[in-house]
Image 1 (tube, rainbow over the protein chains, first blue to last red):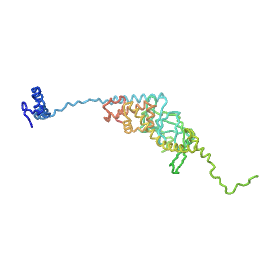
Image 2: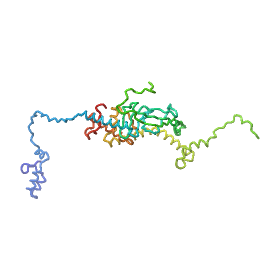
Image 3: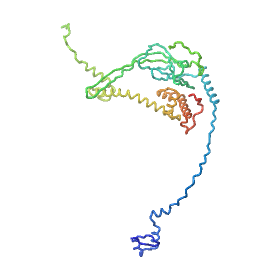
Length: 220
Length: 146
């Protein structure tokens, strides 16, 4: 049963009953301030703003960065770099060179005096000297020449000699199914050929390949 | 008495127990405890070791590859790129060096590896990739040919 208190607000019956005991004025003031949450929130709500008319969009200022394309500078740099490399090649001042060779499906990074192990069947016998022609990269202290994917045959000379032709250690292939009386043993030794790389050298300067390529010893 | 002829149809069955065991015990000479000297115990562990060897020979290839990938990635991160980017650029330009060589170069030919990393950054900058970080290194000229 709603009871009308002061200023038309609802006051709880217990407080009405206790009114003569306490200082009712302050109690009533406090109850008056105690609005329901919804009422309190309703007072905080802002008035609805009128609809804003959309004006035309102003284009933002486009900032363009001016990049100076200087092919001359790039050409200069290229020439300078190649000149420095060719100077070293001409005077043989590059020092020890390494080469990345492609042999029997594998790549090896070799220098002079290196030993390379070739696994599996390999025709050349002991004492045979041959030239490794598939070179992927050549480099020294100050420059590297990378092939795409291979360098030209006439650019690099990598010579190797077969030093040893032997068998690998015995590899045991053992298969066992325990407690099932099933086992199988296989022994395998594959041929290993040891190559000694004699030299890794550059035959001509960069960008100065001879017009007529040598065809001696080539099989077409 | 002199025996002039051998016994007819005599068989020599087995008789190599000692050498069969020797073959197993030779493989167990570096084991611990009775496993290295007592045949009936050793044979189990020798069989296990041989099976592990067969399996490991296959796994070694994958392990090596993973190690090489880690090394190449580490080298690339030191120089400000990633191996995945380097792979893409090498594929585009036609450089066919494999993982074994790249990890070797990352350790022993650092200047060559740095050249590859610089090439990666410049080529990516040309394509418009990875441009939010530092600008690409200067001194790398492609002239649109790579």
